[in-house]
Picture 1: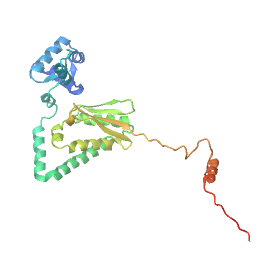
Picture 2 (picture 1 turned 90 degrees about the vertical axis):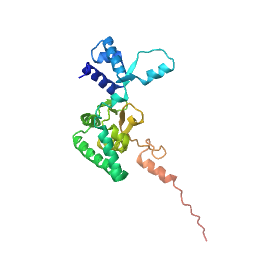
Picture 3 (picture 1 turned 45 degrees about the vertical axis):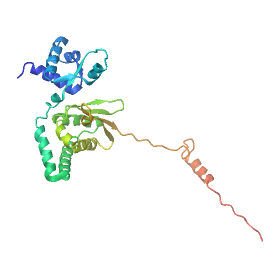
Picture 4 (picture 1 turned 135 degrees about the vertical axis):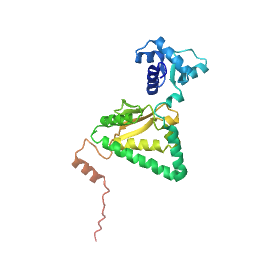
Length: 253
């Protein structure tokens, strides 16, 4: 075990879950002094575990002032979270494609999707409300290593967050896994819910997240069709009066 491993693992976990953080915020979370935290960050930076956040690097290159530094994980540190079998996963997917072709790989993804959908559906059977369904989904994904959480928004919905992707290597090689994931979420959360991606790891996001909102339907009634100030009899009378009237010319002998 390396020296300070426990503290530095906690620092890495916080950055993984929250993104770029400043020394003072990390110190508060771990009940440390800011000076002690900066010592950890300096060492972690020298070993390639963390780097200055993207906005900090941009400010430095633009010649801006020096705000308090924010730190984030390097790509190598991101990969320490649950991708220990990444090479095996990569080889298996590439071998499947080589032996069975793209169609065979699609069938593999589809089979995994159906099995996951079945398990999730059974787990959410007792969750009647949207909040309960989302919370149960968080629990399921957390157990699978996705570092999942959910936050409420101002529209009666939720932001569903996955701070880590344990199948990132597989998803990079075959994005069918990501398509299946979104399809599963939509299915288990129900037809009364909209689920859309908000952030996507494979498109440069630091995590994957989804906006979950209940569907709303409105009935639009044209004012010329129904007038609430008139009763049914009057409306029928108006309709009759509006119809073209037949006119007859009577010629007497």
